[in-house]
Image (cartoon, rainbow, N blue to C red):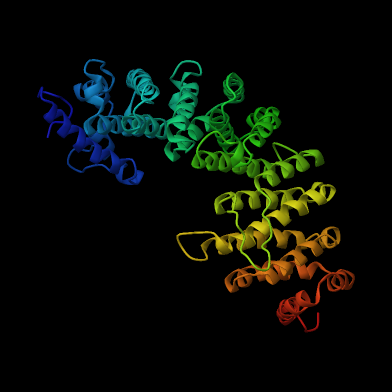
Length: 484
């Protein structure tokens, strides 16, 4: 079969060759290099020389493929077809093959041809992706080839495309995608952007960060802030080398303050609930990662107190049940939001325990709110019965374990948490809730000395003491009674 020349003028013949070549490239890009280097005894050519040698990138098939993707005539109808997407993916695979095995498959003239073709295809696909915001269905078909192209060969976006065009184009697509998808990220786009950042030097990283800040300052839209925070979060995760990390560090505090703006109650959100949840997810995940990146950013006691203050703002107060009727209000946050809040507090207790000491009242206030929301999941509707209380109790147990590591500081504060749990048992608590929350309560009891236990006993009512007695007996059964 002659694949190097396109003698037929029909689209069907061209399409057949595209699909055949695509099935070959998906295999050769993942096969072991030893197989590709092995030579045929009859002709003495290796597999990679027979498949896609330097002559292929100068053939009519290659030029026809590039022309088909970039030609403007009839572009709207052509891009709506599956063949256009397959041809774009084939181009990406071929460029990846040439890039990963360039020392054996190409010369300078071939490299020049591949570079020019890459620039043409990237510019065409980027333009198509940016103008596809009105129709979300076609937008997905147009963006997929671009995301795949960048993710396959991110280094060429820095080497070939002039100036900072490729990274800034990707950031613009980030913003347009967030607007169209309601704050949802695209994993393939994230991978493409991470690949570009990893191939940047310090100067290019500085320009990209300035572009991010300038774009965020032009509009105060929460979705625009969320897309920018998400982009910086990816940069924070994949930054490597001291020089690049230094550039990321210089603007880190600015992005932390912007991320805190995303943590606000749903009552203040002008968008739908799903958009609000996406913004909280982006802001909370970024803060959790930033807290752990002590080589890039260090938080002071004031910073920790500020983060705790914004976190508690998400946890709306839940009125207690009375002893006759059930609670009348609905839970203000979902389990996802609850887990994000737990992740922030856990990260602070793990990486900044001393700063959490100085903000102990705020730390305990967030813990108290998390406990009340965990207990309130008794009546929360979920696809699986008990799913919410299981997820929330596990996250809350992680926090109590971290608190128990610093019991000398927090032991006088956990008295209120234990009393709140006992009071909730008195006003009504399901057996499932009690069972799942007991490991966390046992961690709190383990922090208490005789003095704290005496205070708990004095404060409780007679009816509360009988309920607490069963909890304490269960705790005593788990205590170690042997010799150290």
